[in-house]
Image (cartoon, rainbow, N blue to C red; front, side, top):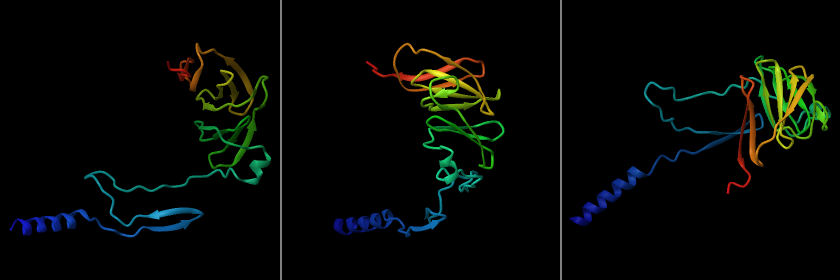
Amino acid sequence: MKYAFTAVVAVLLFIHCTGRSDTVEIIEENGVEVVINHLEPYSLEGEPSTFELEAIFAIDFEEEDLATRGMDEVLDFDVDAGGNVYCVCTSQVFKFDPAGGFLLKFGRKGEGPGEFQEAEKCQARLTGEFMLYEWMKQRLIFFSQEGEFLRQSTFAAEEEIWGSDVVLLDSGNTLYIGAPEDPD
């Protein structure tokens, strides 16, 4: 009797624990691999259970025109209040309109006013300024959103900072975020 009961429990557990094994369908759409899941999504009562992604625009960084203009690795980007996109490359900034069309580039490699070696962070300000942060030199470089150099300022961290970031606050103060290179 114990054997029969154990066998029935084992069969019931096996049936209950084996899930549906619907096949996964993989298609290619516009050069992108898409995995189609035929299972119904889990949903919470009163909450939406599906979403759709809608492409508003795209910037093709492999476009020949951008390559001839000097666009290389994009290190950071930001969007201003008007929807313009700023892409920071190694030593230049590229500005695109809200539809992804190229508008202008500004900045250049160097150490003089309006020049930088490798700015890694940026911020489009509500004041109409565009700020770059060059962490190796610990300086902020300000441009107008039309690309005109405005000013720069340097600051010294008390110790070597690793993984640093900087945010210019609306108050005008600077928030410097990072961790000591040697936490001991």
